[in-house]
Image (cartoon, rainbow, N blue to C red; front, side, top):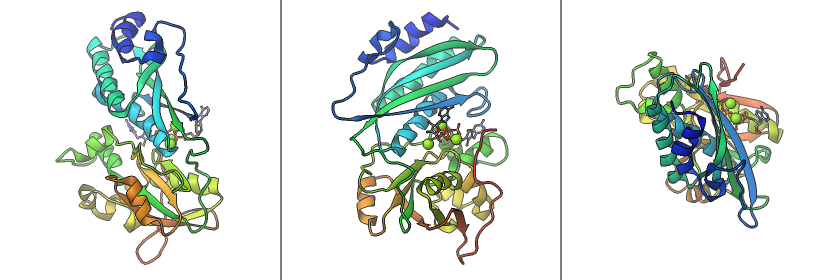
Length: 311
Ligand SMILES: Nc1ncnc2c1ncn2[C@@H]1O[C@H](COP(=O)(O)OP(=O)(O)O)[C@@H](O)[C@H]1O
Ligand SMILES: Cc1ncc(C[n+]2csc(CCOP(=O)(O)OP(=O)(O)O)c2C)c(N)n1
Ligand SMILES: [Mg+2]
Ligand SMILES: [Mg+2]
Ligand SMILES: [Mg+2]
């Protein structure tokens, strides 16, 4: 593994935008786009916690950016740039670093981001990676968790629960003959670029699990929420596994889909705003507190957990 300064010069400087000053100065200098508000978010990826030892470094890099892009999407923000922090064990090969940088290059191009700077240090054991993303929104247009109103409908993008099944497959706990679940677990699709401002009253992305993340909107909005389990969008691959995986799908997390609160009667406008991204109505916000998950006949389904929580 090349030393700190060689790593920066060889692998990270080529990823930097103008504001990164070639990664040769003490900090980046960025002129925010005129008349826009900045949106800032940071998420970590730790070996053993967010990915497995030996995972493809390009996919780790892309998921690192995508998990953060998903938070920008949840705020309705457009990506601008990012800072990168790495703590790498000395035993890691230069090939690992080359793969990691290639993954960053691929997705920063795909999502319109440039590297602004970061920090490099060594780690005694596990790999630790952190990306801080900057994005922008029109003033006052950020989508918040606290704007839902009683009667607003609960919508979600894409399908829910594939990634947790992929993690189970990677841990040898289930079959994944086509590799679909594993792909969904390693490479989420952040829902950036949807024209949601003025249409949705609250939003969050699903990192910890559908139920737990929905509970954050409910709590911040001072409401309860009820969803119908059978309406939660399911991929054909997960549907084939039936109800035995329902709880895992609703609480497993790593989906990086959006939960949206939408006033009733906006179905057409919402579908138009989401274009090629599928959106599905799964429930409604109601006066009260907490999230209820109901089966077809209206009986409440007790859940063993609501979602992922770090200790
Ligand atoms: N260590 C921390 N210091 C300051 N703020 C934090 C810390 N950890 C989380 N937060 C903030 O708490 C809120 C919830 O964090 P988190 O659950 O990680 O959100 P998300 O799932 O969207 O990444 C966010 O606003 C985040 O910025
Ligand atoms: C090796 C491995 N074990 C477990 C998981 C599942 N997992 C780890 S953290 C997490 C929740 C999301 O991560 P977190 O750090 O809470 O991100 P945030 O909620 O801040 O976006 C999930 C579902 C995983 N992706 N990889
Ligand atoms: Mg976070
Ligand atoms: Mg989030
Ligand atoms: Mg979390």
